[in-house]
Image (cartoon, rainbow, N blue to C red; front, side, top):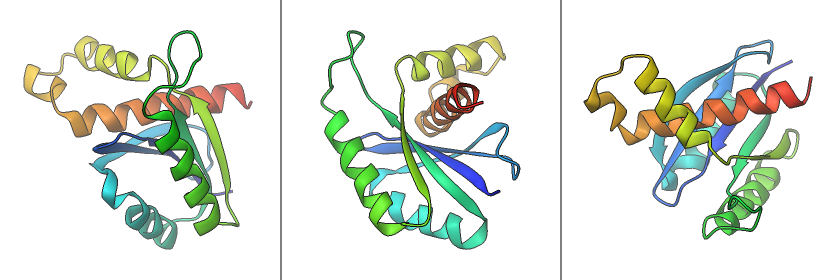
Length: 137
């Protein structure tokens, strides 16, 4: 089994996280400019065995789409075409940024660290991935 890579899509920045090699525990990977996502995913797949991808699906509290939902869905289709041998799943990402920000605060991260958008994005992807792993057990 390979790693699962999670993607917290944003219009400017995107957070990445991945599992351990057994696909059981989620870890933050990095935050990158959204324009670099496909290149970076290609690099990850070339360096590590990857079994699939989990993309955060932006939704409003009532379940309706947000302005970012369409972009995340387009990215999911592009990933599926580019990596046809890997699964692509969408996962609800509501509250992932809030949970990530609270984890930084509870962990004693400095104000500077808590304002680091790339760190927050990668932690949000980690939350999305860990939730996905718990739901698919």
